[in-house]
Image 1: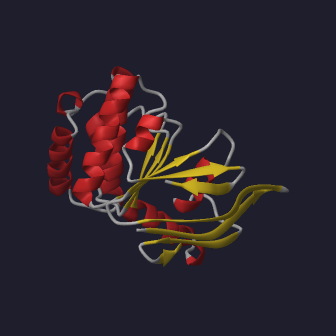
Image 2: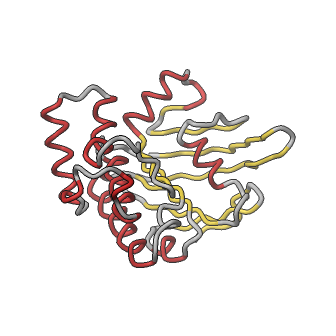
Length: 219
């Protein structure tokens, strides 16, 4: 699902990523650990096509991101990638249902099929009772469940999660990790998760560790 080959990235004179290579297979969950500022989120941004690499290759299902223009990258993100963030990034004026539905609208799916998919997924992630709630009316755990549902509603090949439990209490964090595992297994999607949490790392098949822009070890 994901191949990263010898990627480097600079901001000005500062090297953020230094010769980073990794892969994520279909259905595999990979945790990326390391101290703040070591390059984890930058790597996630490069993998998601938000930032361009300076050198090296990022392939999502065999497609080289460096060969895509901005329109092609946007289409790839809409169809092949789902993103989950620590601070949820839900649209505040949309209900839970509408936030989850949005990716399907962006790829042009019909209203009836959209509604059916959203209702089904909301039941699976245990958030049906909050369908008409705005983000400001939901708890942190509820918002993260909505965010995860939004990330996987379009059946992406790759899920990118940036500290998905970092803003949650431990009990809710455990529930969110179980949910991520369930939805990635059900969809056969690869999952690359940036985290500081040992519990989150244990929920994955493999752990990669980063320091000063380099991958230093794997487990």
